[in-house]
Amino acid sequence: MTERDSAYPPARLAWATVAILMVAYVFSFIDRQILNLLVAPVRRDLQISDTQMSYLLGLSFALFYTVCGIPIGRLADTRSRRGIIAVGIVV
Image (cartoon, rainbow, N blue to C red; front, side, top):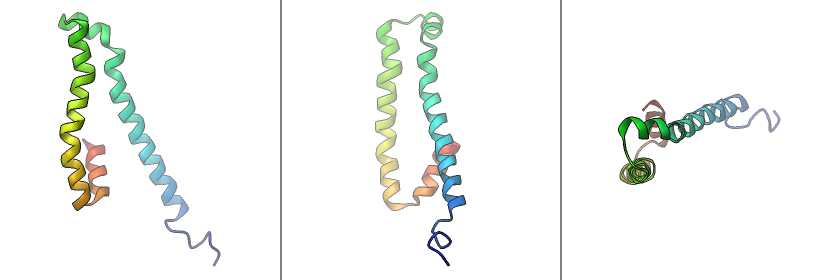
């Protein structure tokens, strides 16, 4: 048995994991950028100022990640990280 045959995890599983995480990252990136692409239509439809739009884009994003990041970080210390990532991908 060579070193390559006894590798853990198997190469196929490792690459499948990389592919799944890459797809999750791409969706996360697209999700964060969609609002940036729609700034003009959103401002026009909601009739809001540049300042209000910046709150929508920046402050709300930062507050959401701060408020959710602390409890999720605490869960990551005590629960299955794999499960937390799976729930995050599903949501």
